[in-house]
Image 1 (cartoon, rainbow over the protein chains, first blue to last red):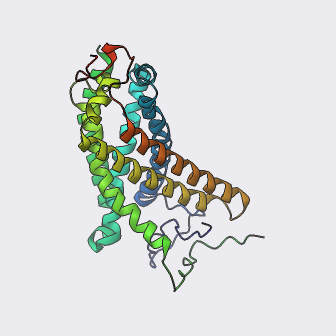
Image 2: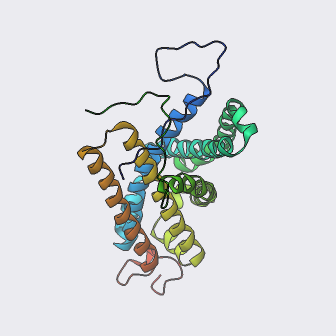
Image 3: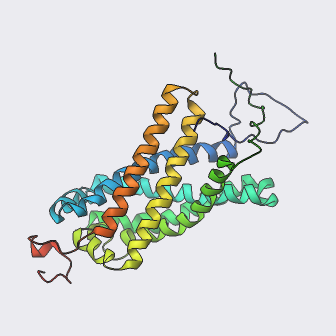
Length: 140
Length: 148
């Protein structure tokens, strides 16, 4: 378990104009794709731990499950669910982008374009989800 | 002393003999990821978009879903694929930000332990679930229960 072979992807170097920025991070689309994938992944992981435990309460009693799941239906948690779904949708679309970049040479060359496609698909998906979800949360 | 490799150092060569677990981990992240897009988006659509969305979720809602083996298997498959995917991602992050040693072993051990415990717990919950527990108030139970 101590092998560390998974490393931060390194962008192909441009031999023409090399400008070391004094930092490992390149600050372009590829970096933000990687940073956001990490942050959303960690957030989803910790939600998943909690979500398995709260769902396990159905095995305790209907009252116990309903008491906890009721807290998911408050306005504040409703906004939290918007953030959660936003993280999941980004991680899903960007993960598909990573797979394309890994296996398809066109996608490797056009990974920047694909990042903006991921953002566009994220916006479209969230436009479909957020209004409907907020209507459910803020109406009774 | 731990030597920090320069960023351009190629990854260490994988062992020539035996199974390359890191390669299979890499493949697993991609294979499970594709399936999870379908499972998780389906889960979110059915639970948050259809009908009253999150407001409709209660014991009766879950009981109604898990009365159908289709949703039992959907959720169990999602549990295994997602938790292992997430724990393996966290393992990558632990490897990236800690040096080999006690702290790293504790963090990875905690990941392994919590993953195994939650996989067993979640699988048992889905397959031993009783939608009509005796002695519960009828109005909390799914409509198909004799008491309801």
